[in-house]
Structure formats: structure tokens, C-alpha cells
Amino acid sequence: MTSLSILVPAYNEQHLVAASLARLDILESSPHLEQIQVIVVDDCSKDGTSEALRAFATTRGLAWREDAAPVNGTSLLATGRAGKTDWVFLRHARNGGKGCAIRTALAHARCAITVIHDADLEYNPRDLDRNREGVSGGERGRGLRLALCGRAGAAGVAVSPRAWQSA
Image (cartoon, rainbow, N blue to C red; front, side):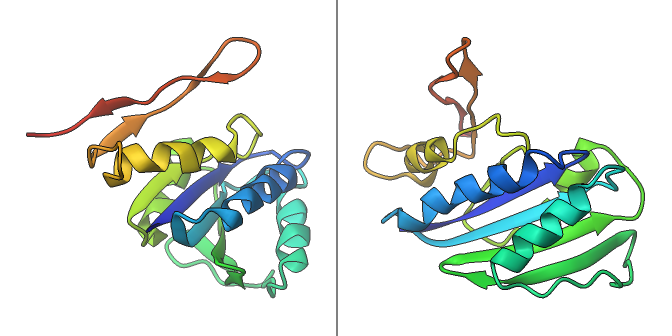
């Protein structure tokens, strides 16, 4: 068994972010994951993304702190556990771009494996559990340091991970 941190950068995704996060619930039933951590970073969205995130966090029983003071440009809006998933919701005071949102989330990640899951429904969370084995060194895995996965075609067929491992 292993643990998985999921970094979710979000910018102007009010219509998709809640559905994208809800799809991560499938990981709760994975017998391979003992802990899941989801870190959502709202990169100073100008639409209703913050409101959508607040509503989602509330459905998970998390207290939302709208008045959270920013530290180094980032506010901690909510944190808590639901099932075996630890949720962390952050917001940037200014838009820094996807890379900045990923770096912010990465600074909070504490699990054995860390992945990026976009907030726009592009990726299927089932692929996270399937590709976990190659990264963690499971039965078929090689203990990879980096695996890049994507999708191809209009049907969204998953592509096998491309792997790099340092010697």
C-alpha cells in the first residue's frame, strides 16, 4: 500500500472543478491507497471558482475560512479529512499561472507519490490508481522517479506511462 498526493491547480473552472474533485472519490475504494491527499490551489480565479470550491468543501464537512489571511501570497481556506482523503484548499492572492499553483500545492504534499490532476475533467482518476503501481515499484512496477501519462484520440484512450529512472 502507498499514499497519493493529488495537486489540483484551478483557474476559472467554476463549471468543472466540483465535478472534477468529486470524481476523485473513486480512489477511496482503492485497496492500494492507504492515504489520499488532495491539494486544490485556486490561482486567483476571476469567475465563481472560489464559490464552487467553498460549496464542495462544505459537502465534505470542511469549515471554509473566507477571511483567512494570506501568508506569502497564499490563503489556507479549508483543510480536513473525509474518509481516507485529506483535503487542503488554498487560494493565491494574485494569479501566478499553472506552474506557480503547482509549486504551491507541491509545498504542501506529503505522500509517497505526487500527481497533478487538472480541474477541468481532462484526466480520469481511475488512471491515477492504475499508474500508481509503476511509480511505486509494485508487482509490475520499477520504482520510477518520474512517469508521464497522457491521453490520445477523441475517445480519451489512456496512453501507457513513459518512464524515466535515474541510474
